[in-house]
Image 1 (cartoon, rainbow, N blue to C red):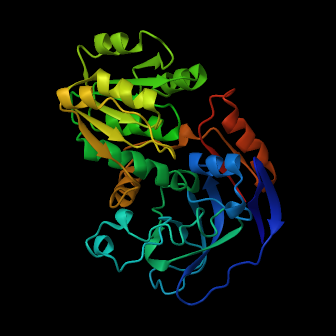
Image 2 (cartoon, one colour; image 1 turned 135 degrees about the horizontal axis):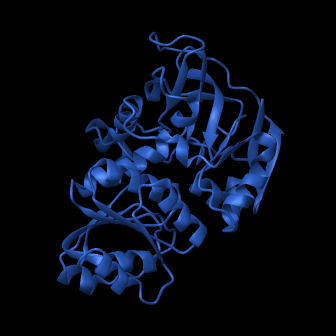
Amino acid sequence: MKAIVIEGKRKLALVERDTPKADGQNVLMKIERVGICGSDIHFWENGDDKDKGLIMGHEFSGVVVDPGSRTDLKAGDRVTALPMNNCQECFYCKNGQFNRCTNVFAASPGISAPGAYAEYFLARADVVRKLPDNVSLEEAAMLEPAAVSLRAVLEAGVKPGDSVLVSGGGIIGLLAAAWAKYAGATYIAMTEANPLRGENAVTLGDVNEYFDARDEQLIPKLLKASGGGFDVCIDCAGLAASINTGIFALKKGGVLAQVGQNYTPQPVNILIMTIKEIKFLGMFAYVHEFDRALNILAKGGINLKRFISGTVGLDGVQEAFERLSSGKYPDVKILIQP
């Protein structure tokens, strides 16, 4: 089969790899759509030797070729899957908290094991989900980031009438704004350093107002716009500047949901956080939110297609990565159609 692998720093390669074989247990699927994630771009930009040859891709949908042990599936069924390979044996897995699995990265699809930037993928039977008839393959490939953002909104307790600040106008930030609006937030602001993405967020309709993250008067403007402080801040940037902006812009007793990742320590203003009694919540992946997002999508509660900037074949992936990382376009989510 054809697949895309990391070849070096900011360089991908189209290669031939062995097609996974049906084994009577796992579900073999033909990949139809797979999303380019920010973590994929990070791996590509670094081009570490340990990642050379890795097939990325953990946001995907496809069609069943062989159902393995799943008696409720048949060839031709449209499916998606949670990109998890939790051990099912540790304390957290046994208590239904598989996102906290102590071995979650041992063989994680697209990160430490072959992913879905390929024509075929072999998924563990228990993580595969059959798609309702009214959910498209494009939408299904958006469920993974949608679940990440939904968890942040639910855990932060966003409720009707709340004011919410979202930091970062990438796909996670846009989806966080969408879920916040779905939860009843009446005022949603976004901070973003790229004006193209900031303007795009307002155009999409969930964000009421966008603020330039580079503005020296950013915090006073946010406090004024929110009437003295936001109820919730969902940080999807993972930078000291955005985290501290959230701390200063929240009202006393506000909630800061940390979704954005960073591989280096970030200095945070602990003094203001403690004086204001900010509740800081670390967010990682999801648990039941994947299935919840799928159910809401099937009922027409949220429109995911509007976040898709375009679709490319395997021969267009390198160019898509360059476009997404350039900062010159408003694009936030490009899908691959192998």
